[in-house]
Length: 258
Image (cartoon, rainbow, N blue to C red; front, side):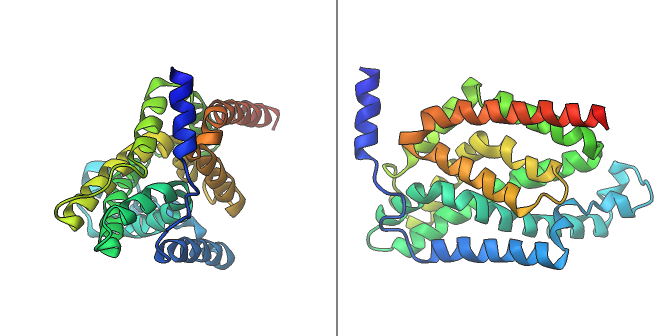
């Protein structure tokens, strides 16, 4: 019965880009263009320019009271949301299409509300991760293997499976109703929470890997897109976990050798 239900879901699945609002692929293209420009101009380190590094060792409780710290957080958040748009929107095309087609009379409003809610959740996650990293200030040589290993282990957890299941059920069958903007925002916010539960650990690699090249971003985007496609998801999730664990072990081994 479980297999037949899974096959029925796969039969209902259609191409994610079908009926997609044109503004979405444009936003993805602009986000990637911004990332390429940041890499080319040497500004890709904005995600890692911590205010505490410029505050001469002030304690965290005092640092968060200073305006320069929050200006740095604002700069990080802008860079983080560009990266989220480039990496997460391709993995959520089916859900975005569902939000748009679910409000046939005002599809643009519904799509905008859905994306705003989605961005709100990712922004909250990004700021929380940034504050945690700022407080801990981990050594880069240790942080990246640790996050790789944690992300790999997470791929095999029940929480990962639950969040992935919720994300698939939301797209494209749950659609906003009533006040389109408010309902779409709530749906986008909830869907964003499922996405954070699915992909948050992998996105943290962008924080741990200081100055991560575009190839990393493109590779992780491809992995997250594979997880979002029902025909590939069952094999993709454990394979990604195994690959991340192997990468963590190799990185630790190389560190020991050097």
